[in-house]
Length: 270
Length: 260
Image (cartoon, each protein chain N blue to C red):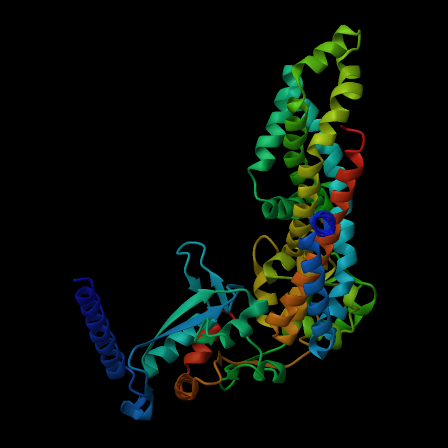
């Protein structure tokens, strides 16, 4: 009786497993070229990690509580072309690449600059926008006129693990103990507005966005010009060539149109 | 005859030996052996050496923040604890309000609140370490207040009554009779809270203080090596808390001398 039951259970299990295999086998077709020569991911669900405190690229909308921004819009355009279902997930930036490498997401699109260091553990798409690091200080601060003034004993806020942190250290020569590293950039701006630190270094469009926010616009100002040139790319797992090729194809297609330019204007990115 | 005697001696020796074994703190032996093993394997790996040599700078700040916060929390806790057992309605209400409100708010929230709301108001916003200490001691003061209250209430009523009948005032009976016994009784939970505070000091990394956890975040972000970095971070925290635990045990032992 007992043995019979066990046998039945084993039988059911194998049957289920077989069905499961057959099921996934039929859906896991490789990207077949769709009409227009673009790859087709057949509606594959793609989870995208993003640090949604980085407007205008990604932020959580105050009304809908959805993640919105330039990156989200662009990803949706790409997804439409190569047929996948993007789902943005909020994540901590300082561990976002290790999380991607550990397959917590399928991709990372979070205003990510392509760097050689990051290329060691993740793969990048072709660049989709160029930005540079900008310095922002209190409006009342007349001592800082260029990024090279930051090394003169000022406390500088950056976000942990960003190219802003790197630029403040290597380009602006800010000593390590004068760097304040925040988990998210919004706290750095909050501290700057409170006069708790002297300056913030971050990606130009984001600095511009924060400086234009009503609660900050009369307190902080952008100083000088961007002092680095960087390109954003979409990061994917090194083994996921299917997704990488599809994203690159979609990006290339979009670059032949005015879509990216329109999105830039929509999000006020110069 | 001779055989039985040596048997007896043997048994006695064995008993002495096993009694000796019982006094060995085996958990400590195991921890030390494992710790030495881990440390050795870390030091023979270049990436661990890099991580450790960077992280070690944060240890001093972690210890500083924890010790200062704990000392302030002890004072706050003792005052609030005495307030909790006070028969004065006003003092009692204030103390209870403090304990219940602070105990019900997460420490991380208190820390962020202290730095972004209280510090600009006080004008100390250039010192995030001060904000951190303020928040930790304020938060832990509430926990310690309950520890002190429990200790005071655990002393038999008759002790206070006897002190009063000898002509001591409330303050005197507290100071000379009840508190000395109560504090001795609450030493273990006090030590426990010190260890807990050392661990909770990692929360001040949220306000960009470069203590041990923050340095771990920086190191992990730039090397992408979360595994080794946080192994090293955990190792350093464990070393600190174990040293602390031993210190607390020692304190308990010397304070119990002459109790029986």
